[in-house]
Image 1 (cartoon, rainbow, N blue to C red):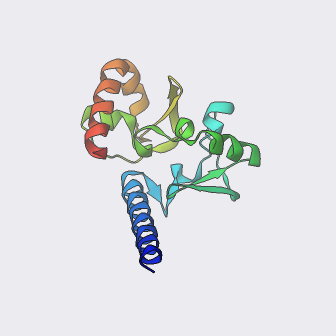
Image 2: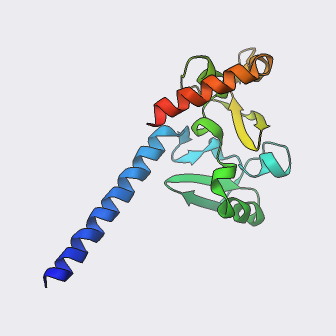
Length: 153
C-alpha cells in the first residue's frame, strides 16, 4: 500500500512540476491566446523564406505554446526539431531585446533568419526595427542574447 501511495504522490508532483514549467514558459513568449507568432507558420520562414499565416487545422502544442502551420508537412518538420523553428527571444522584437531588454510586440512579416534561427521585429508607424538591427547586428545580437538569458532565468 505504501508503494502505491508513493507512486501516486510522485505522479502528482511530476504533473504539477510539468504544468508549472509550461505556465512559466508561456509567460515568456509573445502569445495571442496561447498562439505564437500571431498564427504564422514558423517553418515557412525557413522553407519558403516568407511569413505565411498558418491554419487552425494544422496545429500543435509544444510545451504549452500553440503553433499553426500552412501544411501537415510543416507541422511534421516542426515536431522533428521544435527548437530549430521556435522564434528567438520568445517571439519578441529582437531589436528591442538587444537595445534595452524589453519585450516589444512584432510584425510577423518583418523577420530575419540568422544562423539558423528566426528573429522577428517591430514594424509600424514608420519604424522598421529590422533596418536598425541590420546596422549593428553583431552588437545587438550579443546584447539580445544576454538580455534574454536574464529574462529566462
